[in-house]
Length: 197
Image (cartoon, rainbow, N blue to C red):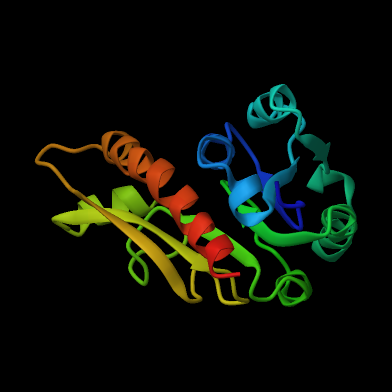
């Protein structure tokens, strides 16, 4: 069995369903033996994030940094970086982490910071993506895994999943359909990064 040398740190703010999909894929597809990789820590900016309990049940280290307890965005990001760096990450994965990160944070993890966004980028950056896609009459929606840059929801596209927008769709129905694809695509994209070295 190869030694673990590729630690993955996942940042969440809520249910952590994409984080859970990645953890399950790491177990099921033996990332430890195949790539020397493991999910080393799950960090949240909300103490009540449901995903923290999932991580604890899977013996993954957890930490909480309440952004409201910090005087500035920079102070929060500095504390977050200290905790992340403690785990010597090869990849930092944003999985529903609802904070815009400072340029200093993004630069610190350049090339190793990835995010999933619920639209087919470059369309519909920002929030309310599903409602906006429906309002614009889009026939297709989806999600994108991309490298994080200082420009919001830009950066190299690593993977995309496409789902149809159905007649009578609500934003909630479309979001649920997209999420099922996110749970397939995000672990796949992370695994491809691990495989690439």
